[in-house]
Length: 149
Image (cartoon, rainbow, N blue to C red; front, side, top):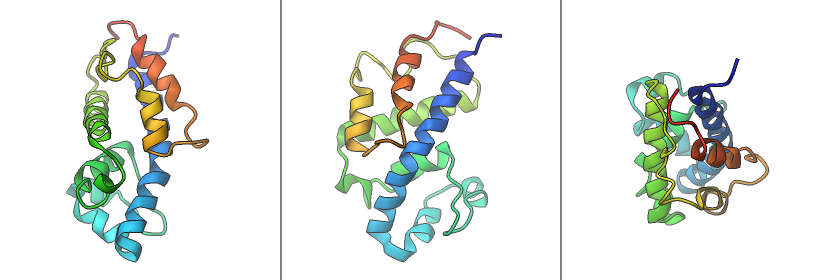
């Protein structure tokens, strides 16, 4: 059986989570030191907080990582990222929400006409290295998806 677009996006979001986690935790710890976990919890939804784990073993999912990037932007991430990255976070949140609500994906996911260097931006600006080699598959999979499924 062929893999669906929904499954493709899901696999890519898993890789995104694995890749963003070290960057986000590092920046939060640099900014808040020992209070990073408590400060992060303050900006998550009640549902996300219920599943967030402990300071020693946080349980990040894609939604909580992207929400943290968005909600902690002014306090933490604006210091190391720019407007382009903020826009990418917004679009990634939109993709994640569409995926979670099983909406149909088309070839225009992430507005590829505007973000041709998406992988390069993620790699350079979010310091994604060896822990995140599959993000580049995300670029190609999403860009060349059939129009529906």
